[in-house]
Image 1: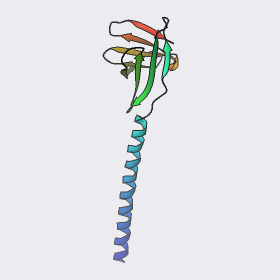
Image 2 (image 1 turned 120 degrees about the horizontal axis):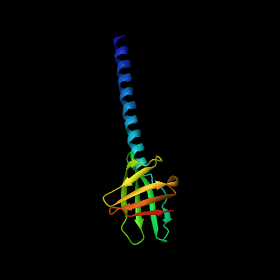
Image 3 (image 1 turned 135 degrees about the vertical axis):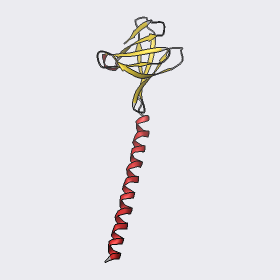
Image 4 (image 1 turned 60 degrees about the horizontal axis):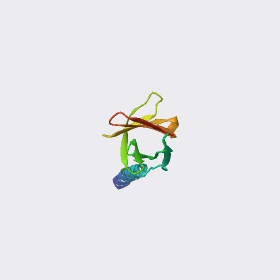
Amino acid sequence: MKRVILLSTMVLFLASCTKTETGATQTSNTESSEIALLQEPLKLKNLKGEEISVIYFSEGDVVAVKIQKAGADEQKLSAKTVNPSGNPVFTNESYMWEITQDGRAGKLSDKDGNVTEYN
């Protein structure tokens, strides 16, 4: 009888260890797939006809955006706050991107305070 109890205890112990390890593996796979989320680039123009490329993507738990003006270096901006409409506002040292019209347009501000709207 002691052997049966000891054997069943060992089987339950081993089974519980295996389930925990499998759950941890699934969590890490989910995190790596979230990092890979990347939307198609949006091509937007301002009133002067200048074009900008906007790509929204996930950076861990935070949404970020890559912005590239024609002939300029790509800028990566991270979401820092929200505007009164509830849309995220993305910033880095040089630029601020504010979403308008549910991601179909936006306002780009530079560090000098110049604001350009893109549709």
